[in-house]
Each structure stands twice: as C-alpha cells, then as structure tokens.
Image (cartoon, each protein chain N blue to C red):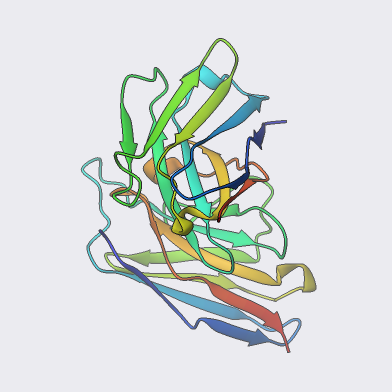
Length: 111
Length: 118
C-alpha cells in the first residue's frame, strides 16, 4: 500500500493568517494517463468529508479560492491563504493513483 | 443536487452480518463507479471497497476481502455493502462516496454507524 504521511498533525492558526499542510507519499503518484491523483478533503466536526482539491491543484465547485493545492512526485501541499473560523476541522490528503489511501489527518484549530 | 443517503447500520455481535445500503439521487447513478469508505471512532479514513458502474468488477481492501461483498442495483440507484464475519475492528461510520480511485469523493453521504460488540 502507498503510505501517505501528513505534517503537522495539529495546526493551531490565528484567524486571518495563512496555514499550510504537507503530505508525502511513499511512492510516486503519476498514473499511466499522466495525471497525478492527489486529493484533499476537509472534515468539519460532526460532518462527512468534503473534497476540496483533486488532481493536486484543481478546486472543487464551491470551494473558496483561499484554498490551493500544489506539489508533484511524492510531495504535496494544501495552503489556506487566510484562515476563517469555518475552516476548523481535520484535513486529509488521499492518493487515488493506486487503490486509495489517506493521510492520518491534520487537525486545524483556531488559536 | 447530488445526494447519497446510507442506511442499515446498527449493533451486531462479533461474527454476525449486516447489509448497508446507499441511495443515490441527483445524478445518473449507472454512469459512475461507487465506493465505500469507513472511519473508526476517533480515527482517520479508510477505503473499503469499490464497484464499477456496470457492477462487473469489484475491489476490496485487504482488511475486508473475503468477508465483505459490494453490489449495486442500477434500476433502483442503490449501492450495497454486505458485511459478514464482522469483527470488533469493523466498528466505524461507513460512508458511500461517488467515484473510484483518483476521482473518488466529489459526493459523500452522511454515513451510517456500525458497531460490532457482544
């Protein structure tokens, strides 16, 4: 299985400040079609996961543009340009190039 | 609006069986692969199983292969997960999600809770 390793696991952030989450895969994630299937999900307290980003850097419909994804190979990043109160929750990266595996999750909280 | 609604969870003894359902609406169900993902209490997300749109191919995580079966009824826009030989470690919220592998997860249900305990 492809192991996804996130850091940090806990992320206290001041409102209005930026935040960054790193995700590293144990294998490269480029699929035979040339795409890199790395997604980011947000799970607010008591809610189902919601996909924010797919194929590294594509925002899902309705996702605020303060969320952005980047990376290549085995190293990927989710950035929030200015954290808002509604961003509190756990963030997961997921690789879908092989059968899906998720990172451990990063708990974002407001300082 | 695309929607998935799971049902069928509950309390079951170790070694028992349970069948989960996921009713889809708001999209052409028969065009899409579907997946199950679970989340143990206080833990992260784990992919469980996927079925392609026709139902002709199914895929399972090692942790459930041989015990779980995934199926679908495209005439009723419904996805199923038959869970046999349940273990305490199968205790989790089970979510259905639209799609497979790299395109999985643009739509999720609210989940149904399975508790395996004597």
